[in-house]
Amino acid sequence: MNNVWDSLAALKIEVDILRCRSDTDKKYSRDLIEGITCNAPIDFYNAIDAVERGCGFQSSVELSELCQKAANQDSERLLNVIEEKTKMLEIVFLLYSTERSVKLSWVKNGLFHKPIVLYECLRQLLRDYQCQETEENDTIAKGLCRLLTQIPERFINLLNRYILFHEQFIPLFSRVMELLPPKGWAVFGSSLSFEDVDKKRMAFIDKCAGPLDWEEMNMQAYPLAEAWLTFLKKCVKNMKFGSSLYNDASNLLITILVYHTKTYEGFVRILNETVNSCESLMYQWYESVTQLRSVYFAHLTFMEHMHFVWENNCGKYAAAFPDDIRTRMLFLLDEWQFLWDDDLFRDKSQSEIQQLRNWLNGLTTG
Image (tube, rainbow, N blue to C red; front, side, top):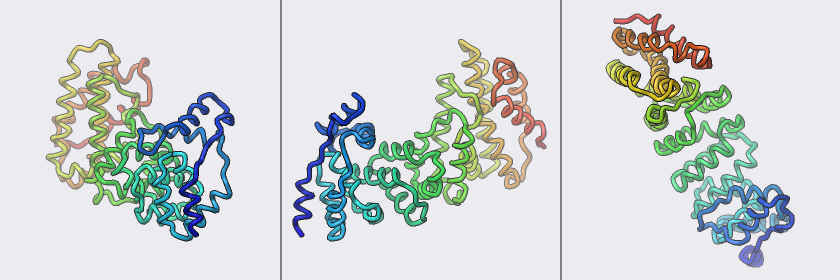
C-alpha cells in the first residue's frame, strides 16, 4: 500500500521542449522546467496553455491509475501530497490525473491549504465544465468565493477567462453572485469596463441576476455601483467616454440603485448634484469638442440610469418629479444638442439621449 504513496512522493514530471511548435511555447515550457514554483510570482497561465497545446507532455494512464488508487485509499492524503509539491508543473498534472469527483469533494469540504492549488483545481473544473447540476455549481461557486478571499487576482482571472459572458456558465455565475461578499462585488466591478454595451454580454449578466432576491442583496452588491460611479468620475477627469449611455451591467446597476434610492429626498438630492455638476463643467474651457462631449455624456449616462430608477420608484415616492430639475435637464439637452444630434456624432447615443428627452417631456412635475 505504501508503494502508491512512495511513487507519488518520488514523482517527477518533465516536458520535452523539442516537441513545442513555436519558440514562444518553448520558452514557456522551459520556464516550467527551470523555475516556476508555487511559491514564486507566477505567470503560469501562458506556460500551462503551452503545455495544454501539447508541448512535450502526454497524458499518462499509469499516473491516472496511481492517483485513483491513492484517492480510493485516502483522498485527503492525496491532496496533501499534491500540495507538498514545489513545482507547479507537477501540481498541474497530478490534478489532471485526479478524477473530477475527487476534486469536487476537496473543494466542497474546503480541504485546501495552498490557495494556488485551489486555484488550479478550480481552473481545471471550469476548463472541463459541462454539468449544470445545482450541487456542482454550488460547490464550485463556494470554491471561487474562497479563492476570492485568498488571491483576488486569480479569482478575476478565472472570471475573465472561463466564466463571464459564456452562456453555459449562467447558472454557476448566478450562484457566485448570490454568495459574493461586498469585496467580491468590488472585484467583479473591476473586471468590467463600463465603456460600452454589447447585447449578448448584457443578456448574460441579466440572466445571472434575474433569479436573485435584490431586495436582500442590494447592499452587498452596492460596491458594483460604486465601481461604476468611480468610472464615471474618471471619465470626467480624463475627458474620455465611449459611444453609449449604457454598459453591459446597466440593468443590474439600475436594480441596485432602485433599492439604494428608496426615498424621494434621496433621489432628488443625487440627481440635483449631477445636474449641478454638468451645468458647471459645460462652461469650462476644453481643448476639443470630443473632450466636452465626453464630460457631457458621462453626466447624461447617470441621468439616464436615474430615469429608470424614477420609473421603478415613483409610485413609492408618492410625489411629482421636481419641475426645476426637469427644466434644467431639458435645457442641458437642448442647449448642447449639437454634441449628440449632429452628423459628426451620429451613433447609438443619439437615440438613447432622444429617449431621455422624450421621457422628460412626458413627465408630470410638481
